[in-house]
Image (cartoon, rainbow, N blue to C red; front, side, top):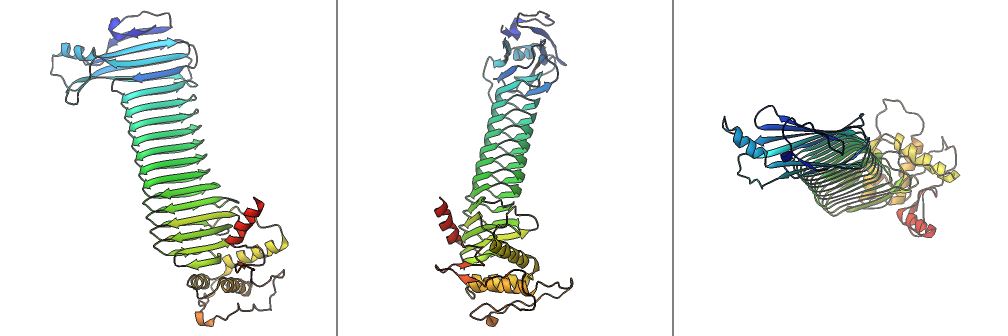
Length: 484
């Protein structure tokens, strides 16, 4: 049954065959009218709200089995005192229809005429609804804020303009806005947001998240699930993420903190990239900035192969890579078993790769030679003084040392400093370029390593290998091709 407010008198107490109870009464002033609809029992429903009038819509889930709708229509603007007849005329322009079709409850508002921008008074209809928690909610609104709380069914919103807030939803959430801010919190299920213009904030979600926006910032916090963000302009911020991540923005900085996923891809046309993430075995991590610096922070014991290129800017790496190629515009090297891959490309801007305390989630190779080499690399990380390590890496990058010589120096100094040193020992002086010989220096024999370690050797193709356990990028690609 369809009911319109023009067909009902105030204080009408009729009950229709569809279970709705209608009661109209004056509001708090002559410019306000209130209508309440109550459906007894019936359990969860599929609530459809078609808001063709301007005005907010609020939906809340509750433990009751009944569905309640409270409609308030009021005059927007200020009428002169004593113009109650004018207020009634304006209010009558807004209509409300409600129809129950089995489990579906449809609430529709209409306006008899189009209100222009310069109209000083117009009718506004606000809708408030309470539904059983497991109900589904579908809202189509021309203009007005929308809030949905405490529901377990799916949520779908299509709005021309106005902000949207969704809190504590256990079903999937899909939002499509022309303009307006979006806030989504505490959701069990996927979240999809498409907004023309407006900021997006999503937090505490267990499920995949997809955000597509033309302009506006994007903030994602505490998400367990894959993430895809595509924006034309606006900054992107993510924190405490577990899952794969893809970010593509035309203009805007990107910052990722505390990220753990196997696939991470970030591409920005203009803007800096800052990413702090765990490196997982066989992970793939790609960062591309058209204009802007790239700063990557990874666990200092991570295992990965690195390929970094900069069209204009320096490449600085504070990690003890086994370098296979280094010049002003590129750096290639390996840490650990090199199973993961990190690629960074900055067309205009520098690249910084640095370490942090923590686990890289990598596995040490099971072979004896792999274990020995892994132990040597870890010793180099923890015992080399920063001045010596940076000096050696810098000389390799500048071409004053070959990759083989640099590897030999790193391992030799690691073995020579392996005996415990006093906590307040003075850092050793950096290695001077003129102190280098054609071959890596021979390590002291006083404290031989627990297992024999072969000196650095050059492979047949000219690339370098340490103890046969740290293959170069070229060798890694050849091996992967053979496996494929």
